[in-house]
Amino acid sequence: MKHAGQAALDGIEPMLAALRGLPGLKEKSRGTFYRGSKAFIHFHEDPAGMFADVRLADDFERMRVSTKREQDTCISKVRAVLGGS
Image 1 (cartoon, rainbow, N blue to C red):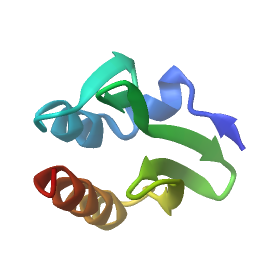
Image 2: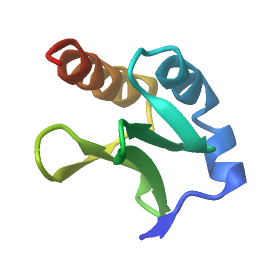
Image 3: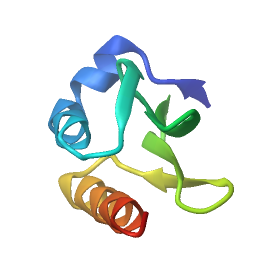
């Protein structure tokens, strides 16, 4: 599964915009967000869809984010993690 290219990221731009608005995240490069000094969320494209690798605990968890509903679920989990810090 390859890292998402610019065209693939264009398809999830509303999600990226939502992530940019969350406190505690810094976008190091388009679609790659850090929390402090650690990578926190980045994206992959695959024939099966778009996926986010999110550090919800110590390790990354892969979540499908192809649909608006999947994106909203991912953002909700990110908010919960950020709110717990």
